[in-house]
Length: 279
Image: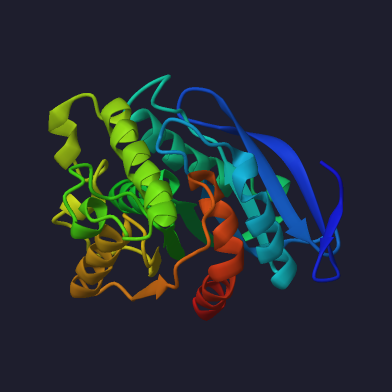
């Protein structure tokens, strides 16, 4: 990857290989400022794509802006096994394995090992939420926070926001495509109907939400995933987890694939403030 700049701060991005549950996975590291020295915060980010697509490159702009705004952070965009290769729980096991690998190989990531935050968008946000559950259940690694951006949390697709499309025709077309992608993704990711209520597939179904890391949950107006995001936030709060739930203004989405790009414009300040607050 080439060096670049954001907000007059030099950002370096480089491809690395991390270990998943059953083999190597692609990943991309983003850090700002001097290439020497260790950062206190590592953000591990999982991409969207409805469990069927997406790539580590989708969050390049967002993660580069994030580390440029605060060079004490380093960000790692990590891949995971897609449903077309292996269904649930392969991606879950990969997400947990990546966190374990990151803790073990912190020197390779220019990270001090002090704070580990898991984050993701859409299907990746599902994995971030589930990775928080798995880390708690398996005794590590310790997480300082979780950032869930427009998370997919309800395989049943039952919420009002998922079933109700906006009145604007152009906007409705885009949102309808997002809903269709979610439905197709769940069918591929969870071919066994019994898995759809498993808490590692649907965190919204979990009856054990205590002892999880602080959470930032971001939804957006006119987004079909809005209701399930806010319902999960309410459940975390009821379980005593410090949780901030924010609904952002409608994003000017031109196509479903532009959701990650919108994070840069509309959510960067919220995410940066959350990470700083748990520091």
